[in-house]
Amino acid sequence: MLPFSSTKESTNYARLCRLIVDVGTRVLREAFDKIHPPGNLCSVLKGASVHTALQTLRKKRILNAAQWEKLYPAIPTSVLSTHFDITLLVVLLRNICLLAPPAKGWNDLPSATEMTLEADIARIKFYRNTVYAHANQASVDDPTFSRHWKDIRDTLVRRGGSSYEAAIDSLANDSMDPEIEEHYKELLQQWKHDDDSIKDMIDKLDKKLDDLVNPEKRPRLTG
Image (cartoon, rainbow, N blue to C red):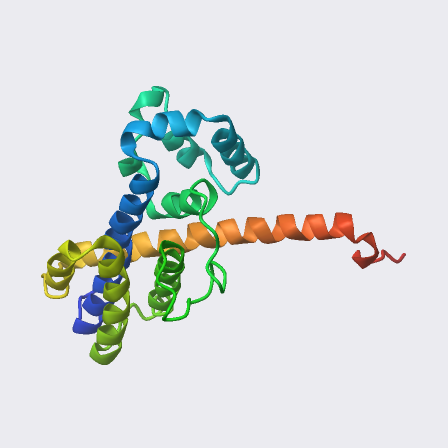
């Protein structure tokens, strides 16, 4: 027996999860492939500067073992961006694609006039957080759904091209059984969890660096 019953509101939430994870992943993968075409990916990853940058991310635990194996499989020429999930794609776009952070940084919603690839990467992440804010209830009413859907759709169509319009519009009305709904909810939750883990690790590293640079800030131990 399935652990929940599907309602219009829960289906709305699942549709948003599917849009941001499924279509968002495709859009980001296409952006990555334009910068590092599949035919050159193996050579790019073997390059000294890229390999060193990724090794650093691995040591900092920003890249985990499973992601490392996707980047450097036993047969190097078998590496494919189609094996990269959305978390890994975002890490790669930000670290080995020579992209500068948007004006407000990677974590805030860019201004409406900023429509670069970098800004849209930040938007996708921002909208991910907006959708995830409904996770506790796993439901979204129709007016909220329409507003979120339009915001996300506009970004994905602008980045992916007009060919995405019909596909995205069909997702808004496609039937979704409860198992599929649960699948996309879990995918969004995993992306958020992975991203939070990376942020926590960066925060810890920043604190360690700050302690080294500013030892006077360390709390004094009292006996």
